[in-house]
Image 1 (cartoon, rainbow, N blue to C red):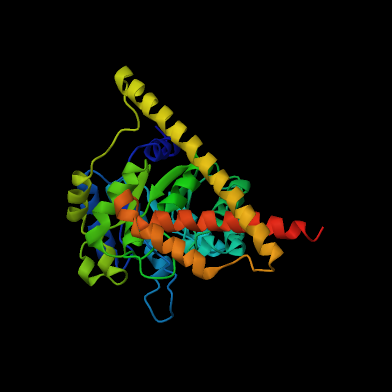
Image 2 (image 1 turned 45 degrees about the vertical axis):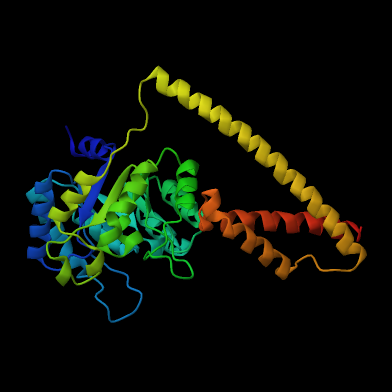
Length: 360
């Protein structure tokens, strides 16, 4: 079997496990970590940060190109294909020179179409898989745009990496997972490999298992997990890395659910419940439609009395009343907040139509 066919088989494996240190620090550190990961029997692809874009200058920004021969040696030693992050044409060229198997585009690059296009231009005529992390900010159009740019460069094997999003306020995560956006992106691009990066979502190792379980339950195709032989003394992102032994323990504890089962009874029961959901959805849509018609009547009164559409006090009252019932309803406050915001924006749009009609 040739090298290309072997890599295709690896990428089709589920779950696909990509692991390795956040940063390649020394030859010994990278080789030792790679060997330990190989010995787990669970790792399919070796990752390592060669160039590390950091938030602030003065932080460790990777060893640079001199780490590529170490990664190549680690691949030869373990038989594992390799992957690194690239952000410029020069980095693409250097990674290809040292036979890196797979490239990935990081969140700080995905957010900038100019940078993505530079990488895409450097990939013209190259046959190599490319994985694309979500942009830092929750913008699926940027993420999809990066996919399109890389595809237009002639890359046929593209994958997505969900690493969470930067959001305002405390969420308990380094990067809020915003699972609904990950699901939406997966639905937009169902043919693409979809990988979850729990290390960057969590930002700390203690909650990695629960995020992995959530990702697997949502049918993620694989995981990218940072692993280091000595995480405490890692030169970057020490608190979110795990030892190879700890990685194996985590993976053994995960419940790996099946996508389907060949059972007529299961499918019959599921079809019945899905029909019930369809009925509830229909009723819910009818109720929302009726609610909007009431909002339009309210707008008519506001128009006649020259009152503004937005009434913050009233909306705060609605939100407070609904959120107080979240536990009783068995619904999370996060979901109810998003649901109410969507209802509110649609209600404002309906009221605006009523007010604008008076100008015509």
